[in-house]
Length: 233
Image (cartoon, rainbow, N blue to C red; front, side, top):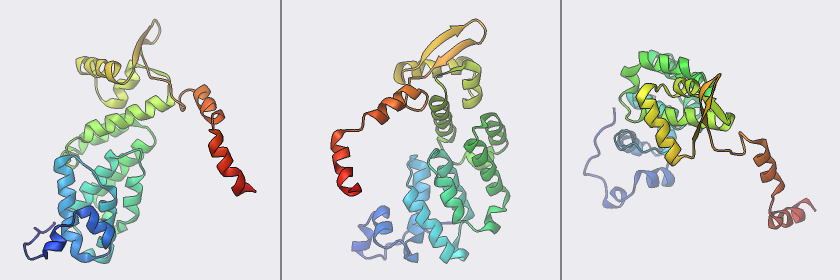
């Protein structure tokens, strides 16, 4: 567990932010307690710094006896919340296999696999069994719901209400308010279908609409082409 920062540090060092400490000397083991405290600060303030967290995991490789598995678990949960960024895999590469074999880490790895493969029903079922691991990090459910919406919106132009409910683990009146919020703020729309019931329509983007992707590819600015030609020559 991270130790409290003492008052014996020189004033010049005390004036550095954690990000600056990482930038100036990322392999200095003296900053390890500051990085551990910074993980807890990210949890309480619902902020995130992948650079600082990866730096801490690298330091743990050089100082394995100082590793806090509680801190490592929090880093991995925050990395899950950052999906679709590949942070979870990057973190996992820096964690010893013997640590990954602990139950809480095996659970987090399974959850990561479900998210990467868009198996949202299995994810939420597993997450419900693992609340004691996940509930220590505020905002977890909301972050995963945002990721689920991201996956749906770049894959489909419209989905049945039931698909949205399964992906976000929201239903009933709460889902009604959720959809209304996104209609107002995210450009969603609703379509009623006799066979499929209520359909949620996502705004078109270059991923769910091939025409937009084609237009984006055809619209390369001339100035970019003129920069490339000399290099090719």
